[in-house]
Image (tube, rainbow, N blue to C red):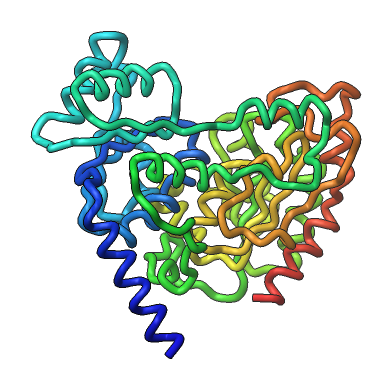
Length: 360
């Protein structure tokens, strides 16, 4: 009887949703940063499951398109250095978004100068618009008081969902990604034998980068326990470190130059665990439901940036009076030693990796 009532209630809610005059074609814009763009995929997945008939046109950079494969979204690729550069470029972008599409709403998931201009053009042309509320005051207040106050701020993924809700849509926050579905991805490194782990020690800021000497120690621990260890990195000094580890150990693979973003995402789906800082690889792992050990230094997961669906038991951090010292990790350490990171030893990380793999 309870089940029948729930079904009836769900049917009634669906009919109510259909009766509303909701947008039928929405342009959704987010251009950076990579981790923030990756998180948007969770929201679009949940929205698409609830409103499959609503057309989504995603406005983002070409590089980020692998995050949204399988979601059924149309994509407008933004070229900020060429076609869409400057004021004229923004006018071209507005035309590229709307031409040939019956866009009737715009969801600004970025709220930066470029997206604000497009937002106002959409509004002036009679389209419904909504934008993200980033919670900057709340975040900077907590940074200023070096406290997370024990209560996490609203997650970025939920803030994305709220933009759709301001357009009149009603739906639940996304469930975590499905591990089973993502294991169907093609493995760019061939047949998997034994246990594989990934290690992403880098970030755009020093306050979120695992110290190099400790990274070497951690690699030494991981290669002893697992059949293959993959080092995720960018170019330059990061790639040099990864290559040095590959040369030193037979079972280490430096991924830089071997796979593109789509291939890296597919590989992560097949890993048993990933060690990541507060950076892109954590969010890529969240898209594939891969267990993550996340190491936090200058920033704090309570500010709303933990990988969506990543278990809290995988978080490694030390509560200190000076943490968090910034929202994004860009500030230099006042004491100069980044003790928030150095206190999280390689052995602590290796033990946590073992714990998560055994749980799985």
